[in-house]
Image (cartoon, rainbow, N blue to C red; front, side, top):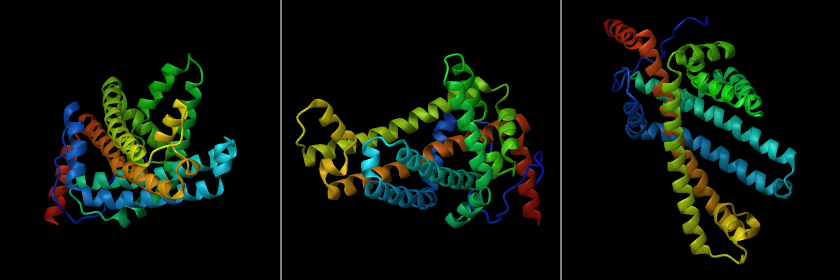
Length: 294
């Protein structure tokens, strides 16, 4: 597919259609939760894969690399970080594609969402690596921080051009820059709000559970630093493997359940930008009318 072409999802089974239109700041934020609530079973099935992979990785890490991680071994930390991001790219892509499909009013299964994401996984991975390297490189120096923030926002919606429009890696980054152009401050504000809401919900749930769990299980620590660490970041040596497995199970489950919130927000932002710049809502109405005639 050429980079300047616009594709329409291929699944032609329709469910409830969500009207594509330009959205205000509050409508995008509200849409994150309303879309998640209406299609919770779909998103839940997708994040189950994230939960299984993350929980398995966590247990393997603790079993085989526990001493290395405890000693701060860079190689062990690098391995676990890379695998975590590889999982996150796959699951985020499936959530993004599923979000787009339900916005089109199309039926999408968990298997179809993952199959489509896997078919686009390489350009997604390369785009993510470029995104991280460029932004991290710019953030190293004080002079580069403004440019870091600029590109962080400018390339913020590169995922959907790959998944929906079929762009290549560099084409997706250029496409994101094109959509964000002349709306940088607005996009920056929306992204900041999405991340703050997402992180607040996730942090409140995880930390609240951690505190309750700590109070119920107790501690032998006497120093304040040790008590705080065991409350929020306990290890199997602190609380025993049995309690650690229970705590990590709930913590990763909370991460999985809250992940769709931010992904849906970015998807809504992407389509809002397309509607504003390209009248994409009119294009989709014409496409749907043509499909109905067929």
